[in-house]
Amino acid sequence: MIRLIMNGLEVQAEEGWTLLETAQFYGLEIPTLCHNEGLTPWGGCRLCVVEIGAKPKTRLVSSCTYPAEEGLVVQTDTKRVIRARRMMIELMLSTAPMSKKIQDLASKFGVTEQRYPPRNEECVYCGLCVRMCDEQMDARAIGFQNRGHKRKISTPFDIRSEDCRLCGACIYICPACSARCQGPSAETDICNACLQIEPTCLEEYGELNCWMYDAGRCGTCVQDKSK
Ligand code: FES
Image 1 (cartoon, rainbow, N blue to C red):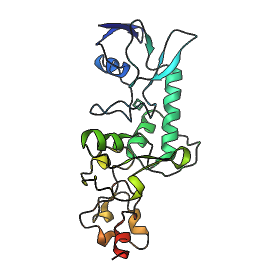
Image 2: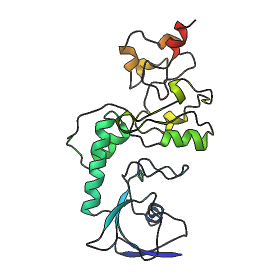
Image 3: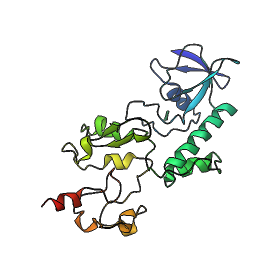
Image 4: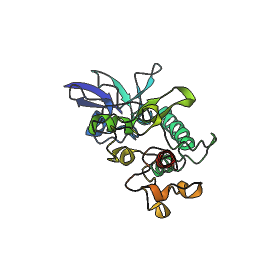
């Protein structure tokens, strides 16, 4: 057993537990976005940050990846922690302003100001879809591409991967596009973007779904042109 101090209380953690797991075991709430119990820790969204160490030498770490250590002093909800979380929510909100999950987080943390211009990328690069596809569906049909502002998630060479079994797990787990159109019922879905563009590929959807492609770029129309 590992003994550490969390919010002023002595707590115990099993060998191999993260700070997030320890906090959850003791009922301490820490918000998460890129974390999923069925997937390997990623540490990408930084929403789960906590403050470790003794003042004045404290630092912020992501609790979903940081291991519980003997004697560690941890604070889960200091002003600095809350400020960092609010900043991350604000950034994610600018990236995916239509995400219900991120809107809910903004509401919960009182983020009412939007200092960054909306980018409407509908992806916060949390890596949930990539890990889901690889680790749970054993497909590896999608992955990260490029760096910096060109970073995106797609299939190799941006063409539909033969490894994709159209299981929909990536859509299911995505916090930014989980409400995206599922095909023929676009009129009643939240995204609806494919109804606004020409040519529409709705008639050609068949059993295909929008998946992680931008609306209207499912590839069906490209295939048709080559016939
Ligand atoms: S939940 Fe820990 S970094 Fe995203």
